[in-house]
Image (cartoon, rainbow, N blue to C red; front, side):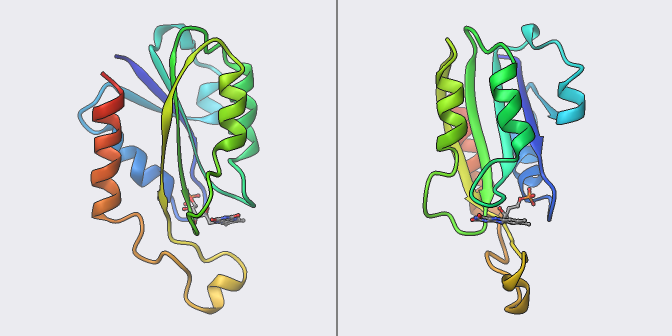
Length: 147
Ligand SMILES: Cc1cc2nc3c(=O)[nH]c(=O)nc-3n(C[C@H](O)[C@H](O)[C@H](O)COP(=O)(O)O)c2cc1C
């Protein structure tokens, strides 16, 4: 199973930390948006879309690629980190993915340290995330879904 994960991870690199754990000793290429634009995705069996959550959504560039890349026949999944994990922030992008003729295999999410705006004043939220437990779950997500 050859897999590509296209990602944006800006503020604290929280999402990238999770992706590094997922990619470790697996056949997974991590691609930034700029790299994804030059990539031939026909060689991949599975594609992941990953992002921090910014104002309730995935990064716009990631959402756009989910509609532009031909996902036909591929396994597709989402990964995100967010400050407050209380709703499925991937709902929008998952709808875009499902509109293609692909197999949506699920989503992984966990909290990620957030110091945006007001939260900075109180020392940030989700301070120690992603943590070892989040990383273990991330490894399990890959093990259970990509084989
Ligand atoms: C500009 C901005 C907007 C954010 N908006 C949300 C939000 O709407 N909901 C939420 O739960 N977290 C929000 N966060 C927190 C981030 O999603 C969280 O810190 C995430 O782990 C960032 O991932 P990254 O370090 O990979 O970029 C926001 C953070 C920033 C900087």
